[in-house]
Length: 245
Ligand code: MG
Ligand code: MG
Image (cartoon, rainbow, N blue to C red; front, side, top):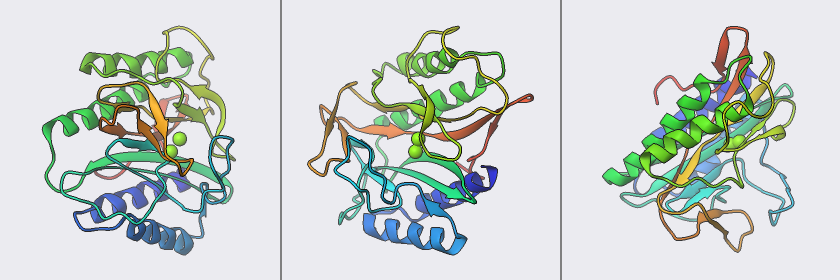
């Protein structure tokens, strides 16, 4: 999973480098597709067909812009100055999966967008810090919620983190809100995708007609940060850490 994680980190670094004013989302999709092919990796999204999607998904990366936050379907859209882009990538290499997401601003950044992104990144780090043996799943959920709440952002509980390993989505579900000291006891060997995501002024979501793209219900801007984390005897090991943010 560390091998897959390193590749996902590299690909998301590349997406952050390429995302710019005038770049089309389909260019990013095709670039990552080429990277995956060259590496001999397998996309976890291609042919992904959960109950809620109008599947199967025929892309390798989720690209969500502005009020879109999860499962953004790459489409013919050219990025504009000030757009907020969330990129979410999961691949498998030699049968092991890693999953990570990041949010960047294209061109001139609005202060409130940077603040929202910072909140998801801080929430993720707070979650990682408590992902250690003997702690409970609720400690992770509570850590995420506490950071979001300190910023004044509401938290949606329909979509959150998850276990992963041989497949992208495994038990347990990791809610982005919860009570400390509750739930599954964390043990070495458990690997979790932790993924706080926030919308500025709502915890409600709406789906696009494409059946995939999830947006904030009130059109407010969004951000999403995700890492794959292994719980080890020595504490949390982040498998998708990028060399630079
Ligand atoms: Mg993901
Ligand atoms: Mg995930």
